Length: 115
Length: 148
Image (tube, rainbow over all chains, first blue to last red; front, side, top):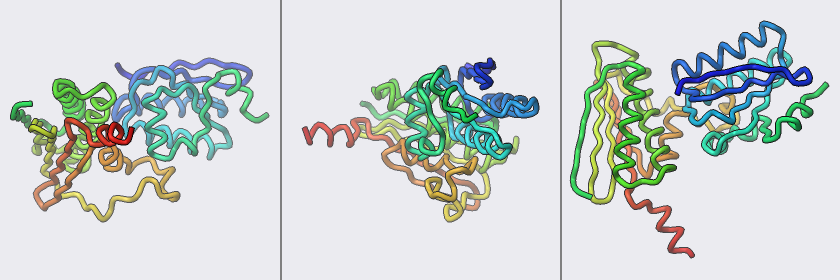
């Protein structure tokens, strides 16, 4: 299943609902383009909902890191929501679980954005 | 489990990466691994195939990737060989080091080592061969049972 994203706004936060696989090639490109598009529109408070992402490889992990640092470097914030067990485990073993702000409740995640 | 070996010669394309992953999943399932182990094995193979296609052969259409699965009595052994210049193992950074955590690449070999029981990397001037080994009856599971 290829990667798909859709965006919605909740209290000034942009929620990106992702589904499919974030892997080398199309999946990583879709995520990169989605983040780039949001930043170009000034939407810098981003909640990445990975609840329907069932697979991610090292390239996809790299793309998540890239999204995180790109948004932060532009003065925004990016948090992760609803990790599947596979993605959770991957972030644990790569020590990225402590780098990302990971949430499992959408309403609480939206509130957690400063300002 | 009977002695069994299957091998493929594949182009240096992204399709090869997906094909290698699918083949690994199928063979690991047939070997009796559970769903989680199948995912780990197929991801390790995917990462090794990515290394072969991208870093080894650099998408060169004249270079091939050899992929072989061998089932022995105790192990599933997967061998992936590229025709590149040979991986320099000394240049692989530790992705868990604080200064590397936010790097966008460099986690492939680490994930492979995390997911397999044994990994042997043999670089040469004519390519890199990586051998991934998974014990059919995992030693970690045995250890857990023994400790209970």
